[in-house]
Image (cartoon, one colour):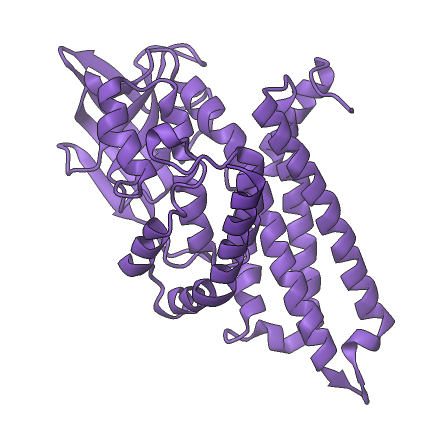
Length: 383
């Protein structure tokens, strides 16, 4: 995509975000649900297929440029951001490893927004990596799947779960598998809707139980032993950068709300914007947002270029952006005072939605472990 075409696309997205996107945000928050018509609109506008290559039916927006669009979408309701974020990234985990049939029947329709895949890694009693406990054992041309997953975004409404498990009897990375499990009422599969959350109203979340659930061997993505390679490298690394940019976009929205309110709200005869304490809050917010944004863009470039420190940059950008978002939204809510605590106030929604990034795609504690390893083994670079 040339510069002029991308500039036109960015202007189009910005206009949609400021107009119809904000109307949809208000409707989602009011009704607690994402209307099918919104998903249709996102699909028809091509917003669910921005980042995928043209050979998959996508629009071929490079990752660094996609981050600039993600920054815009993230100023809206978190459920809109989540739809755009997940659908523009999940294909990466599968495409490199997919069979021709998987690509034709699952990956391309997902890029087009006609099917939905839920990333299915997290478990209730283990982390999000080599300690997963969900298992499979092969019997003939099927795997029998056993275990539990939780906090699975779109796990109720999806068509497929991109599920990480391990062969019975294996430990660590060895023996892990990635499976495209159809959400079609398979025997032994239980889907529990666990969607009542603090924020991100309208996005469903599932607890999944599996008991000897038969999954065709043809559902295997890649080879046995590549499960975490599919999950962590193909999806999580770039996804963490995208989440970091979502923090930037939402922080920018919080800051703008605070600035506008500070100019309007008058106390003791003058606007809040004239008070030094408020000015200092807004100044610190600006500095924090700007610094985080630059690191996210560096991380995005590192992923595009395949730099050896791309993983460290990904996690570092999320650490900085998440901490920044917490500070900025807290300051913004403080500018509003009691008015910001009212449900009718947009900053109240922004404040709640901002909390999810603290654990989305791994907590900052997990990210710190990743960065620390890179620092200690010399992978992390400072230039």
